[in-house]
Image (tube, rainbow, N blue to C red):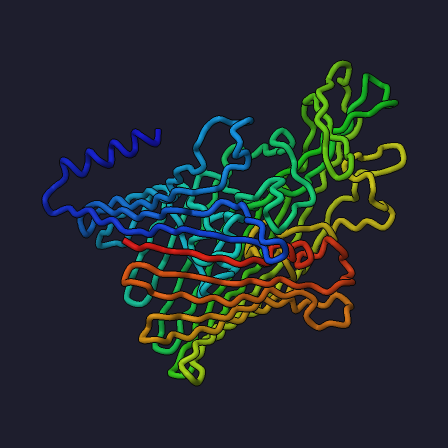
Length: 491
């Protein structure tokens, strides 16, 4: 399929009208990253080559974005896999751009950006995220979706309508020891229960420009980008439940987002703010199905797959969780020019679970759940395990995070030096006011007009005796403290 698209693209170039133009630009990124603890290489995928190609006239364009993602082979001795390939092509975007008197229509695989703040906007929910690029910015950490995107402009008013017939989920590293954040539970694909046959996603953004400010309202209706525990079925052999078998299920909640944004600017500073209210509901209120013949047994945090279906033909219990919750996310941003030509950008992210309810967990002495073996069920509150499935990715780190970025350009615009900090501002009943932090110093030097040398050092710290213990997110990321060096060639 990929080669058909490339062939069609080349053919359209050869037979196109003389007025049509082909524009190609991009960059090559040679990247080295190693841990500060033992100087070992952090073997995560990164985009070695990024190319943008546009072909067409002013009003009708075929726009594309292609990347080559590289990762060092894990088995360099060729004993497991004899293929020398250590990269793959990623067609990140490919869509048709059509500008008419009514507005701009884009159809195809594309990335859409919503929100007033630069990054970490709760309104920016149209596209799922690639967690391998969680600490990148802008569209670099987004995954394109097959959708229709229609912009209508009238004077200073913009109406943006989006529709996708596909449920789009985040790209999450599965059991990757190189990734700094570890997921507590990773289901198999057979454990995903999704009866929704037409998981349409749609939304609108209405914005208005004024002389001193911009305001916007957003609405989005879709499904969560990450999975949640949706329930469990208990099977027996006929009327016997002596040795029960369990069908542990996960799904994706249906979520609505209502939000608004504001940008206020003057000669001295700019203030931006985005607020999103999320209403989410597990639509899997009936989860009974035929016994699939597999069981996952907890063993030191891992799950062993056992195919065993003979005789288990009676569904004794079915426990859907029926989760329903409402939560909010807010991001405030301040931009200002400080003395000595230093640019300041600061952000404050806030998360709050406003309401939550669900059925009780299906656990008793008679019906144990192997997936939850080591938990004290008498003290277990499902609300404590609720995870937002849509919105700002920083919510997986903390409920309150402060971000600071200071930049200075010097040397005749040839050198840029930046200092950034991510601070955990949540309260955990610790003596330290900031229990976790991520500090980074970065420099970018223009060697030539199209060659940039980038070096950075990132240090992640957490308090020793955090109440969450080793599960504290910043504690989990400490080993990800690293030194990075890049050479970027732009063309």
